[in-house]
Length: 380
Ligand code: P1T
Image (cartoon, rainbow, N blue to C red; front, top):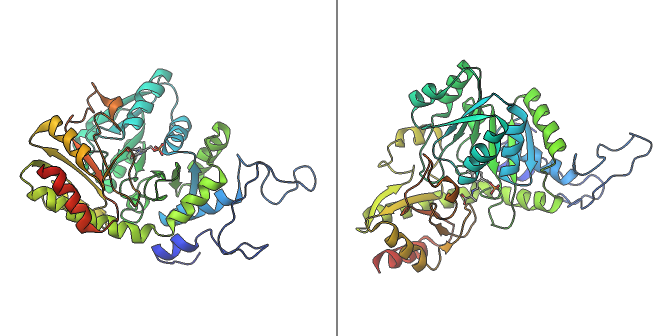
């Protein structure tokens, strides 16, 4: 499509009115197979693991949002991750991964793929020198989360993509926390972008999904081959829910960022709070990089309390609007303790997160209500 702006692409890319009925919204093609006029003669679809028109619409929209040429949709973020690792790595290869990533990503690389002869180093991706030191001749992939889950550290995508290229490795950016509304890694030199579309793309905590986007046709074809061969694909209704969410991604991220900033400021000023992690405030050690690389600070905020884990457990028990739950990126606010919940699988590793860390997914409710809820939970 022409060079439309982000919000226009979100609403129209891959989502032209249905050519047979005129339906303005992409239909849910709830079918597992497609009729053929003769053997191998069909309208572009044969079997729904290999392709489904609702999924095609989503894949086109996903690619357009990231300014990429090719998109693939998956049954979950981890199905997308599995597909990348299966496609790019064989026994003897090495991956350098950030040292603060989603617990399930660590578990997949360390506990599933290391058993298959693939080795991994976990390096501080906020420091390019540490990433350079971790690279080996057999390193095939650099895996970056920025901002990281749950400590909101940033990685310089342009610098690290160039560094990986010099070492003959590809760079993948898990852009789940920022979403393409706030950060577009392909434009900064990354080879692939990965999402848990369960989060901001879906936006309503009602669907699990994943995505991979690239500009490299050869890489896309290899990933698409494994997507079909391994089969971690989303069903048509799940694709439709993500497509519906995408239409308001731009608006939602504006509100998530405004509310995230207000929450971070409240926490900074509260006497019970020891430290705040949020890329949208000058107190963040990489604020300059955030301003260069991201359009806004986003909706994820983490913090530590002076009272440690006991105080943190009290706060997550006391909030009323912030629901105690895993996941993030929905319109409603969530609160959790990563060490005991989303990051339980990094316990005892170099990625272990502080037991008293509290993570917020700040939703788009009325900000005064969110601030009052946090304040009463911190005060009592
Ligand atoms: O849950 P799934 O859709 O499979 O996505 C995995 C995933 C990948 N990358 C990042 C940065 C993530 O945060 C996640 C999932 N994270 C949570 C469920 C969470 O609460 O942190």
